[in-house]
Image 1 (tube, helix red, strand yellow):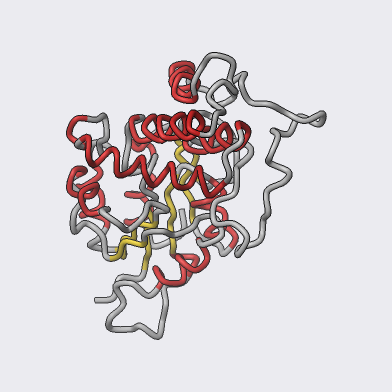
Image 2 (cartoon, rainbow, N blue to C red):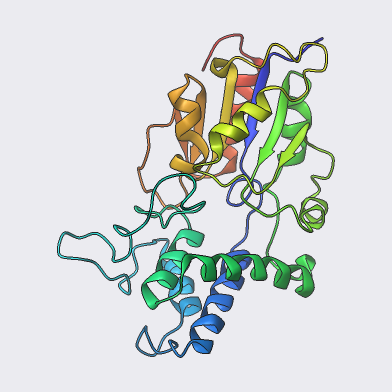
Length: 275
């Protein structure tokens, strides 16, 4: 029987929890700044220290962010916004720690290409360190939820994480083989339309000519623009995990953590109607 629903799941901040990946990214940015002679930009503190303070205070609006006269962070207005110019624009308002590190990196003088290199290098650093020695973990019950929903819906993982050496991450989280399709290097937000089109034909071997109706799609993620906005625009259902209480976006369900998201996903998977 063809599964008529499609569940899209984000990775970092949704299925992959823990602050160490973002802290390792901050370490790489600090090293890049030092190499460029920009290590003193934040007046005696480091990006890692700024990020650690933000996590402790449960806020992303750190005092080190520099703004223009209209209250917009410096560098944000200068970001190109069309698809080909930039895969990962500096985001504002902020919704996760990665975005904060990227903004600080750009304000301190790194290019987008350099901060992107830092992100990819940090992923390799984590693997070399050993994911088992970090706080990286999947939410409680995630594997069971995915397996249960997969009986009624196609389940696709969509992530900006590079495809290179991604398998160890899924293995460490107990999620190997859990998905009908894994889409890496998705280039969200600009790449989300293409990722959704690809996901809509996943798991439909018996009816590839009939992609899943967008209104029967549920997307779960922690960044409105990246993970949910496009799905919402097509009439799909959205669940936003709003860890920092940003209030951004217009999701159908706004939750603090994965437990709330799991409840919404389970209800949706059992329902014949949009919920």
